Length: 179
Length: 419
Ligand SMILES: Cc1cc2nc3c(=O)[nH]c(=O)nc-3n(C[C@H](O)[C@H](O)[C@H](O)COP(=O)(O)O)c2cc1C
Ligand code: SF4
Ligand code: FES
Image (tube, rainbow over all chains, first blue to last red; front, top):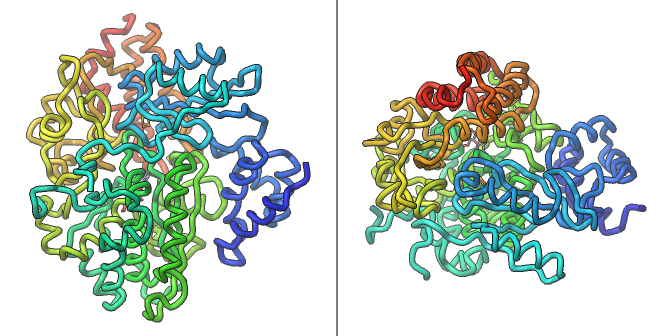
């Protein structure tokens, strides 16, 4: 797949964020943008990143394998990142994870046969007070219950996704009075 | 208490509709303190922050003003990086600043950049924060449009640009030198300190201030109410308020902004509504998963500030308070905790890389009934062999909680041992 014009333009914009002689700094944001557009970092795209930034191929490999969100192989259309850290586990996250596995019929790390879902159990997603939580692609879902997990998955299956929790609801005294 | 009995200083505009939009933010006083700051001498700004007792809210609690003062006098260019990696388990307050009042954080970063005469600001946000990133990126554009960033800002003669940079899933990039490596387009391997204290040798080898999102968001408020009043709001040596992330087995989880030094039991009972489901308090992790666990007895009469929590043998860290009730098994908690560090060790130092892996293997034995009593001591020894023998503090961050669970709840580990 050739690199699209929009991706090339985005690359220019990203490289511009760093001093001229520090193009290599654009590596992580650029790879991120590549997989946002292509779904994963294809070998051709990887080569293109090497050329665009003038870095060594091994440097790009290193970065791709180090960061857990980098995808060097195709994934499902919806990537679910489910938190398995302490606060979420304390509020029923483990049970919910099993429910989700059951519902999707896959284990963590796997993709459903229809290519729709990839399940990843990940570390704390910074939503601990709203646990259990998960991300589906770029959307955050908090205070999960079995019902809510079902709604989210069914919604995606039927093409009528439920609304994500954007913004994060205010919990605690920071909610204050509504102004 | 601030004015009308509320304790909300930083978060007072969180509930304002469209606060992320610059015109709304301006109506609520955004960038006023920045305008005042650029009329002062840079060092004057640093002195005010120093005098306020504002401490770092990213984990180490270092005095913000003192850090700014470490920038070498004659080395340029200089940089400011906002640490928005927010990945210490239990911590979820920077998220709200990003989403609910991004201009406050941008204003704070600008004041910091002016104080140290930096020419670039990088806002480093963890990759999983897609929605918060969108809000912040938009806010940065709006700050430019209003002339708060760019060339010759507010006719001060000083220029500074602001840039976004996302992480891609690595806890270690929250460690300040790991963050810098990541900003340079590398794997987030922390650097040796000394000599690589960022204030002297940071991003691209240049002087760099790395401050947490919340720390910087407090800066405009410090200027607004003055150093003295800010200092007086907290406890000795701990200026102002803090955003406490309250999670786990608690009736009203959430983010609470309260004065530094607020008693832990007040946070749990008065604000958090106590332990739900008729359960009893078993333990608290007071400062993110890297801190020593406290037993229920140790939670009594404990002011939540850096010195008091340290005196009780733990740390305030990122003020992420995780509450554990008496239905929770500590060996299980150990497994959740150790699994995290084993996954997140960057692999650079042998004690941490191998030690975390072994801790994980042993922790599993306590769950599947194959553990022996000797495993308890082996785990303690493994942790002890990591502690203090590594490049960065992730080593200690796994060793300390491990040791504390084993020592304070040894009976629970023994109870599930075969012999
Ligand atoms: C393993 C590790 C992870 C860290 N993660 C974070 C983080 O996610 N966010 C943060 O602000 N500081 C984090 N820190 C602390 C930073 O190294 C640094 O002390 C902090 O950003 C300085 O800002 P402050 O003085 O405003 O707190 C971490 C430290 C360690 C050792
Ligand atoms: S202590 Fe662990 S995380 Fe830190 S540098 Fe060493 S191996 Fe990496
Ligand atoms: S523990 Fe699940 S989001 Fe933090």
